[in-house]
Image (cartoon, rainbow, N blue to C red; front, side, top):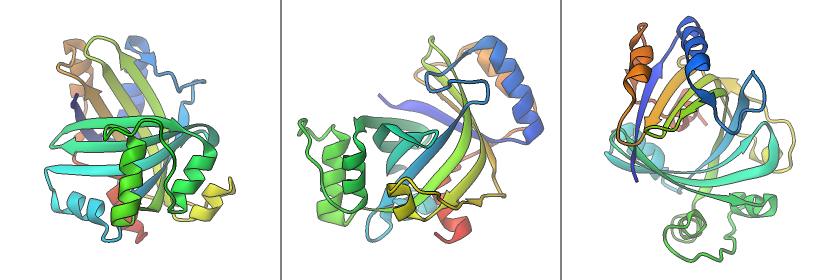
Length: 227
């Protein structure tokens, strides 16, 4: 099922105000273990022609993203994700994988999958590697606070200090990655929901002077830092 995904550029003041209001209305998501939120680190893949980057730049209505994601620098939970975007709606296929499987994919090798259906992100990654030379391109990291509300399957994320790195070998080995901060857009609010957004949440989000954007963190990190 495709979900609505709206993005807004915020100042730190606007984000702090929103965070204060959301704290009293919604519950934190399951990844949040303390009041400071958590760190999200994603390795984005592209093919030999950088097709996914070019589709984003060209504003193609139907486009894809392939990534591996971890939280708080831990390889305990590793998400393999394929994300489809159609205008402002998104569909995500996700699967947990092991660190060994992650390393294989990042080194350009396919991995085994018990589910051979085309709905499996493992199958999609394997096909991308075999047919289009899918390879890791950039590491995108940011600090996140996230809130959820069951009615409408609402998820609101506040992302700060977006940064980019390209030391893929260091990431694979669990070493220290050096990041460049994206100063142009460093704070992004994302609002995701299924068919409707409850009115009281919409009212909170309407306050302030936030600018709606079609921001892609992948594009930002590759273009602005030349990675």
